[in-house]
Amino acid sequence: MTGSSSQTFAQSGALLRDRKQKTYKIIVIGDSSVGKTCLTFRFCGGHFPDRAEATIGVDFRERRIKIDNDDIILQLWDTAGQERFRRSMVQHYYRNVHAVVFVYDVTRMSSFQ
Image (cartoon, rainbow, N blue to C red; front, side, top):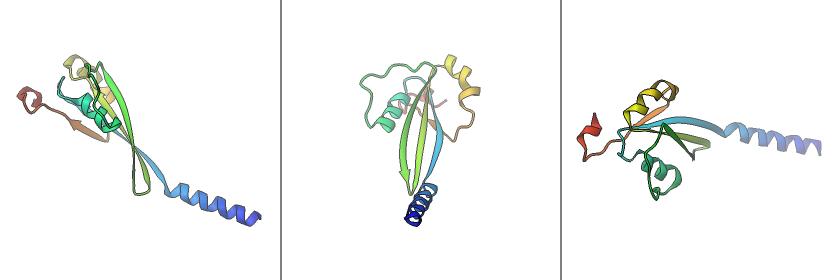
């Protein structure tokens, strides 16, 4: 019986080793009122918020997905669009970012700049 238990533990260990968990930090930036919060709500929760309010500082949302045999955690950092908040957080929140999503309003040329 000991042999069969060892084999089961060995098989379980192999399955756990093959399954990896990776975390990616993604920062979402853009002018105020371009839809950053709505976009992150929809992507992470599957629905748009009933009412979106201006983000103060940074909001954090997470989505877990599975690709092949890997568990992927996407951390979305929804940033404030107002310049006064953006300048103070650049150094701190932009560190160790894996991706940046730029959001803009196609009907508002100033949001491209």
